[in-house]
Image (cartoon, rainbow, N blue to C red; front, side, top):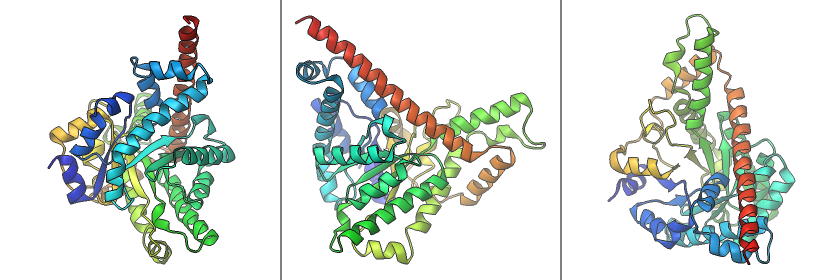
Amino acid sequence: MTKLNELFDSQGQSPWIDNLKRSYLTDGKLAEMVQQGVRGVTSNPTIFAKAIQAGTDYDEQFSALTATKNVDDAYWDLVVQDIRGALSVLRPVHDSSGGADGFVSLEVAPDLAHDTDATIEAARSLNQRIDEPNLFVKIPATAEGVPAIRAMIGEARSINVTLIFSVERYGDVIEAYQAGLEDLVARDPEADLSKVTSVASFFVSRVDTEVDRRLENMADGGTSPAGADVGELRGKAAVAQAKLAYQLFEERFAGPRWEALSARGAHLQRPLWASTSTKNPDYPDLLYVDSLIGPHTVNTMPDATLDAFLDHGTVKRTIDQGVAEAKAAMEDLAAAGIDMEDVSLTLENEGVAAFAKSFDELIQSLSDKANALHAQE
């Protein structure tokens, strides 16, 4: 048994891979990872940009597509083919889990993050185009994205809610999921809620990166409150906030409201720990994996982090350990002048902008490639 299997069997956490590219499908790499215990796949515009721009794996299909289609449509065809291939590989996991796991995630276009109606239309279109039970369409948890999440759940469409950076916004996401399920029942009293599921992707390492930057600026400028040791607070925010998010998960997925939905077959909306690679080399390479293990959660890891966990990860329940210390850390950060609401807004805006930039650069790169290919004909 690999550590990934042990992680799921003994701790109830699903390990996913935060990467997808054509070669993973053609050389059997994804199937091999699933055999090792990987139970899902996440993707985003940056991941696809790197995959398509690196090497020639997509060139033949792209050349054929752009003979009759524009570059934007050709891009979605490339991506959808990869998603379909991954869905096929993960389908046995989905079936054996009763529809609770084995998902592959595909994000709506990043320039829609602040347009509710356009996000709804795009998510519905992707869901209808691919029409597989283990597809997650990803919608960002912006203020405009939250009502789109509720609308899609209300249409019985499974959603990966991405770019969550604060416990407060996570609460909005939980409400959108539960209210969406209630909308579905109101529209169809016979609705089978077991056919709908969701994960809430709570981003981790980026929180420490931004908070540490602010702490270091305070130390350099001498602007921290008297007595605050900003050095002691570095690297504390992300794990602390994630642990408090898990406390909210346990609180909100209990009680009469949730029990009524659960009785109709509703799945828990599991917290998914995203952005779990360690950005600061001074921190342990598995800080955002080993510290966040617990039941009814997902951890999606990039390749290097997954390999590190297989090599020296520790399978031990940690998600609800040190909760009092997590609360104290957040209080200390606030006392030091760290505004976590502003941190989360900054990270949300940066995340949306980074995905949009990757997408725009990829489309430009593909346009250049299309012009060069067809100039040779």
